[in-house]
Length: 226
Image 1 (cartoon, rainbow, N blue to C red):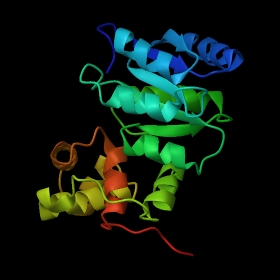
Image 2 (tube, rainbow, N blue to C red):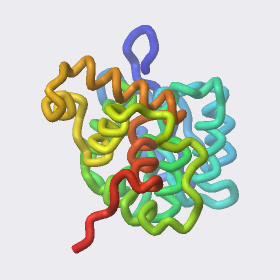
Image 3 (cartoon, one colour):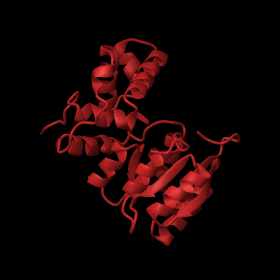
Image 4 (cartoon, one colour):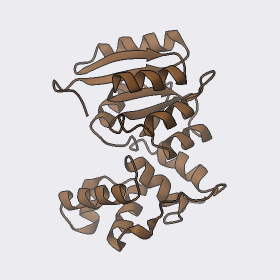
């Protein structure tokens, strides 16, 4: 998603003004990206997101008052913000708050010490509709917490999927791209994309990240053990 001029509109949410200033300077310097707002807590982030409908929200997970998890829930529950993508920012990767944010609709996460070029790339990746799963660490996070099965599996389960769609979801959970899924199943990339899109629609997933969560929570795939 982006506006008619192809501009990716970004909302920053972090309780530290210096962090926001650094991200703004970095992103505003990039062609095709503009920071359209800043929030110092989750309540303000949700309010500004509703008002501005940005393409991407960079959301600090731990903020005073309303935290990033609750703000993510509010944003992903909004019909108006169905196309807005949330990227979680965290200081350490195996964070159950981050897992919960992905579970409710965030597109992935970045650790705060990520390289600037990776942050810019992440914004572009999620803006075009892809989940931020390529680093592999997101899948490790999901496997860590979904595999513990400390809560019931989500109401939307895999019974609504065809056998081929279940197979595709398992491959998504393994980290394969549409092109790689197409090669594995000996189908066209367009067909693979259609299978992924249909699976997402049937289980009410905002993007591929929620398919990965569902695959682990339902036991379709299981965490690797050393």
